[in-house]
Image (cartoon, rainbow, N blue to C red; front, top):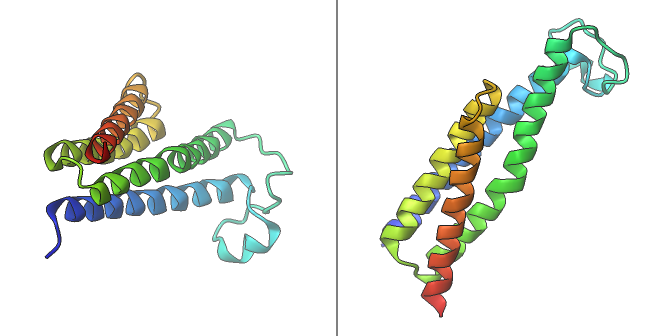
Amino acid sequence: MVLGSVKVYVACTSVLYVKFVAATMMQGAKKFATGGRPPEDSKFSASSRKQTLGLDTTSDVQKLETAQRWGNIVMNDLESIPFGLLVFGAGVMAGADYDVHYGAMLAFTTARCLHTYAYAKALQPMRSVCHGVGMMATLVGLGNAVRAVV
């Protein structure tokens, strides 16, 4: 029988992975639009834009800003999501309080999804609030996990 905390962990991990894959696909598409992909990737793009790893400049500032924004989204995900999942996974293994862990995992997952939306749409202070909620949820999960083993 699978514990409820394991099910919540698997569900949250699945949502975050699908979100991450979608963000990396958006990042790749935006890089194509600016010529930021390697030259050999030209055969995969419907775009006629020459791919030069971004070494050729483009005068379309909006495309450059959008590509940079999606790159930042992916980097932020890589900085935050793995540690969050590690903390929550450790709490599940340690037998942390289910209700606290459940709430923290859902808050983290929701905050990370909304953070991506806010970043993509340039929504401040929503982006910062979501980032802060995600960090606080991780700290709550960490405290809950440590409490379970002390």
